[in-house]
Length: 365
Image (cartoon, rainbow, N blue to C red; front, side):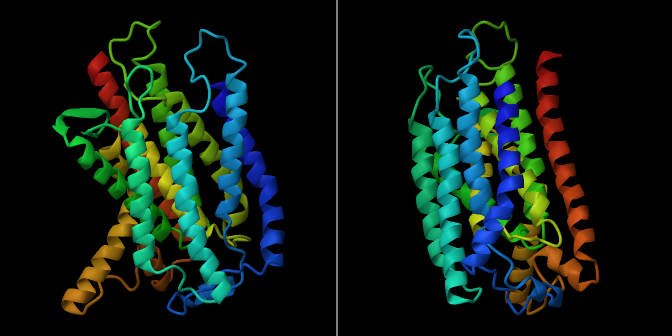
């Protein structure tokens, strides 16, 4: 646990004190956020706020990961820890960096063209499929010495569902779908100051707790006599990355909460979405993801419902979508919306953790 705490602390300090430096650099480069005219009037005051802030917490997470591994090297030899960076770490951080790169391309086009158009939707989807497919194949084929892979060929809920076999092709397709769902879900949620960042802190905290529990009850730990264990590939690695990213987001939130001094942009939202997708797959909790990420699901569904209703009936269900903009139009203040939506996110995380721990109690009780 020491390595996890160090990684989270290092990431938090880096973003807390590094973000103001990034703000000055981005301002000097004139990388200000363009705002769509259709957004509520209050958003126009955010025009020019430095964007691409996701670069800060991506970098902090990578550095914190290295710091965590330096701590792991000081642990006793009998401790069950990865000997160094693992395939699990490569998949999780690779998803974060590559999905962040897609978002960076989108952000760069926005600021260079001085409009909110950015990267065309079809290119985003194509790149998400390529990234998801590449890391999905790696997660499925790279085995540990115990023969365990990052993902599996069955559906998973609290753990792998042995009766729900989907095969290798199905596993890669599922991986792609999860990546696309989470990247777009976090991206849609990133519409108010601090909303996506704060939500991601609690979601990543949930995965940190889940993966650490898996590490403490790991089937690979042959020194322990366990009545119930988990077959995740590198649970301590997953814990450390979740902790580092959560710490990085918490430090960044200091500067991105209302009124935001910096915006994470698609660089940040897509990076976080990619990482959350990797966490769900690596912890073998894919079907638990919609509960843990409840707020992302609600906001995404509000966009789908609005689009479907307008295209089929010509009528809008909400004053504006995604859902947080509906409440803005209804007169709620930005801070009230963010705090109340954080509460919804926390409820989803609490229910998800409860279901996970309840399954453990049901098998050992």
